[in-house]
Structures are given as C-alpha cells and as structure tokens.
Length: 125
Image (spheres, helix red, strand yellow):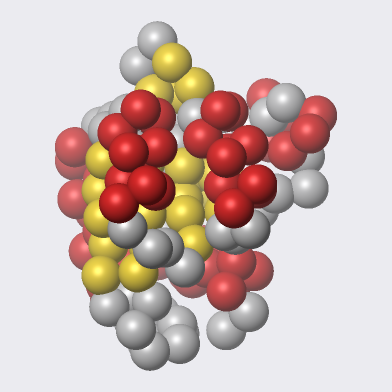
C-alpha cells in the first residue's frame, strides 16, 4: 500500500457502498489509511438510504452495480442532500447513466493512489 497516507481533512465520516465484502474491507482499510476518521460500509442501496437518515456523512463512494440493483437512486439522493460522491466500479465510466458522467470514478481493481485521487476530488483535500 504505497501512497502518502493521511490525505483527508481530519474527522471525515465516509459512506462506502459495496456488495462484495472482500472489496469493501480492502476499501475500508485504504480509506482509514488515507485519513478517514470513520467508514460506514453497507452492501445495498436501501441500507445506504437508511444510513443517510441516521447519520451524517462527509462523502460517499458507491459501487454502481449492487447485485441485481444499482446505486443510481442513492446517487440521486446524495445529490439532493449535497453530499459529494463518486463511483467505485468494475464497469467503465461509459456505463454510468448520462446524469452521472461528471462524477469521479475509479475502476476495480483499484489502488490506494487511485482512491486517494477520488477522495481529493470529493472533499477538496
């Protein structure tokens, strides 16, 4: 894991929406190494929507495909709430719906450096 750690402002709480546990655990480990104070991981869009009602988040990282579902409704809700978000997906950026083409995206498999660049775009670090 080579990268300048601690690239995030102190105290950030991030939402990670990923349906594959191994990828989520690796992503969470990287996000903490980059300086996130807390990472909340959920596996499905409905769980993420519930988390948004219960907690405050500084930014979110969404897998585009969540099993048979997508994170599109969640992305729309994050936009309504003004919470910055980006995508972490096995699909190319061209697979994003047109309304999300301007959102930052990292394709899987991802590196710590790629994740740090995504976060810098989201939180301005």
